[in-house]
Length: 174
Image (cartoon, rainbow, N blue to C red; front, side, top):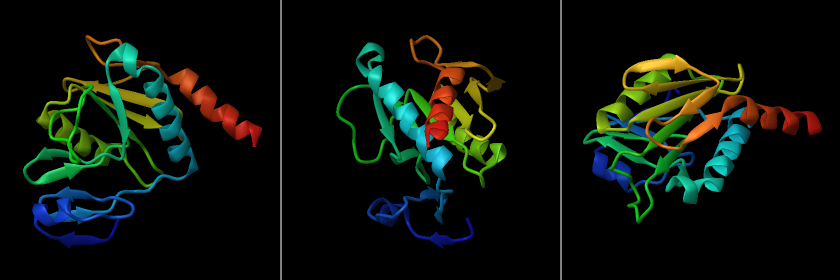
């Protein structure tokens, strides 16, 4: 994550990066691109959330730009949005943001992202670590390690053992 470029937010919003980058106070920031464990966990989560979209009244998106403030745009790994039409860049708070750690990520960097999501009004952020097979959820300002991650006052949940068992079974089959 060494490369940085400064441009106006309007130019950032009209630019396509591959892979996409975040915009933080005028600076373009590269994101750590996930390796297999990250990518596979992201796919499994997306499938889980997709299966529950009608039940939970949500829409799952991956790699979606979220404008968390006038000078910051984040790109979460997975987010749950309320149903309906959404703009190219989300500016209303998602119901849930999930960040999956890559080998070069740290919890502190990810918690910085989470602070931006909370400042925009997101009520729950989950951080999953596919390498240690753990997860944390933050509700309010309290980070908690848990076996079942939830979004308060909703049906939204995830059993970590189940999702990591799927991740392990896919690895064992190859």
